[in-house]
Image (cartoon, helix red, strand yellow):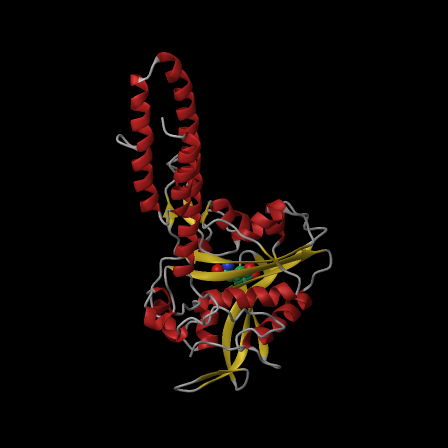
Length: 367
Ligand code: DAH
């Protein structure tokens, strides 16, 4: 039999010299395949005298194991090398700026979400959430709108059947406003409460200023000594920050909402001409939000003692804010997913809204 030590050296040298996976595989077949060198030697064992065969068999097995080890080691080495070569070849330079025509845009509603959150965040509000599919208790009853209350009719509600009950009062709704988050927050937390709840809302309505799905932000502040003066100060600061103006005329008109008493609507001063709407100056008024002092029945429904605590609440249409601030005339276009529209009205993703860095104007709209 051949000198196996010498052979092992030769084969190992050949294996280490295999420069790619294909060469290595060819080599493996040439050594260990059906007609491979070691396979042939193994076949030759049969012709040997029994005594010699035992020794030679052992030696050959050791050789085979060593060669297999060398093949495996080379295979792993080549695999790593191939992976590295692939990674190097497919390397992307992430420091390159995005081509302007390929850059995505932030939707104006998302931008307004961020702006509103930044403003109220600065005032110490946190963000609360509730489900889009609500029960009537949270959407109506707990907000002082019992069954048959006329205000329910005004809301053009979408009802969702309850699989467990045929009773209409048990059917679910897609929330008609973000006000149910007031109740959900009170259920979870005793005062002091200071939250905003931005989110989707739904009503059966469709024209240039109404879409079946739209967005609102709810605000709720509850404490021991909260008064209407806090409400006025808070909302005044909000509209100034939001419209990025140092001064802005505001007025409150008495209004009615079942869940607040007293209730008001807030208007901001503006100038309306045939072609333009200028916010912050002029002799015209623009309704901007609804607000009021939380009704004692609402506090009670949320598990809060109205003899100890009181608070204020407000609700604002986010889409309407976006239309006003960014001069977008038709609400329906918000939800048409037209990429040209988004390019025109959208925002650069890295312009993060903040009270210190600027809400909308650090780089500003893509326009
Ligand atoms: N939920 C009202 C709506 O959708 C808006 C609203 C008005 C919310 C007054 C309030 C509020 O919290 O105090 O029309």
